[in-house]
Image 1 (cartoon, helix red, strand yellow):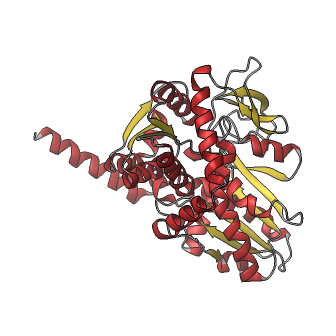
Image 2: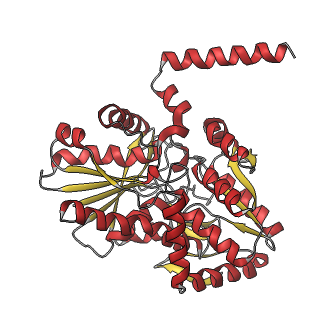
Image 3: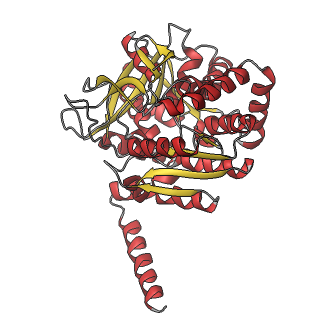
Length: 414
C-alpha cells in the first residue's frame, strides 16, 4: 500500500507489487505536468479548438417559470466533442500519455461515453486502443459501441460478474498488468488508485472554473445550489471544484436510486446509507458490499451511474458534510428527461437527468431570487434504445421490428 493520495481515511493505492513502478511513473509524469504551466496552456488550447470549450450555461426559461421558485441554469457539457464531459479527462490523459512515450491506451466504460471519448483521443493522437465494457452495457449502449469500433478501437465485452462497469474496470486492470511497458490506462472517473482520483478531478476542474465565472458574469451572484449526478464522480468533482471555497454555495450530488430505497436494486452508495467502507479496485471508499466484503450487484436505468463504488474524494466530502447526497429513481429520471426535452428542447443523458430530477424537486421550494446550476454532463443520443423502451414509444418499436425483419431477409438471401 502506498502512502499518498488520501482524503482523510479514503483513497490510497492498494495495488499489486508488479504495478508499483508503473504508478510511480504515472504519478511523476502527472506532477511534472501539473507544475508545468505550458502543459495546462496546451490542454486548454486543445479543448478550445477540438472540443468546443468553453461550454456555455443556459437558463431554462420555460421550466423556471413552470416550476416557480429558483431560476434554473444548466452547464452545457453535452456540447463537448463526443457529447459529454468525458472528453475533458481523456484529452488531458492523451497529452500525458504522449508525454510518457506510450503507444497504446486502454479504458473501461459503462455508458460508453468514456469509451467513445477515449477512442476519439486515440484516433487523434495515433494510439492503439482497447475498450473494456460489460456485456450488459454493450447491449444497452450499442450506438456508442458502433462509434468506438468505427474509430479503430477494439471493444471487449466483459461477461464476468454483473457484466457492468465494475467488471470492465477489473478486466482493464488485468490488461494493464500484462502490457504496462507501452500502455496507459485511461481511467474514466475520479476513482481507483492514486493518482487517478486527483488527476481526473484536475482535468475536469475546467468545468467548475468556467461555470463559476459564467454564473457571476451572467447573474452577478453565485448560485445558491449546484447539482451534479454521481456515478464514480468525475463530472461532479469537475463542477463542484469551482465552488469548494464558496461556503454559501450548497453542493448536491445525485446518485442512482434505481428501483428505490430498500429494493436492493440501485447504486446509491451515500444517499441511502447502504454502503460500507472497504477496499476494492485499488482504493478505499464506500462500496455496496455484503458482510463478507463481496461487491453487490447494482442497478440503474443509466449505465454510467451503475457502479458499486464512489470517488474517495466525494466520500470525504460526504463525511465532512460539504456535499449533500440524494438519489433519484429510474422513474423520476425518465420523467425529468422527458420534461426537459418537451419544455426546453434539451436532451440530457439519463445520467445527467438524475441531477435534473433532484433540482426540479427542490427548485419550487426556493426563492425566485435564488439561482441554481445543474451540470448537464452529457446528452441522451446514446440512450435512445433505453429511453424508447422506457416510454413505450410505439413508432420506435415498429421501426425496430421492421429493421430486424429486413435484416433477417437480407441474411436469408445470402
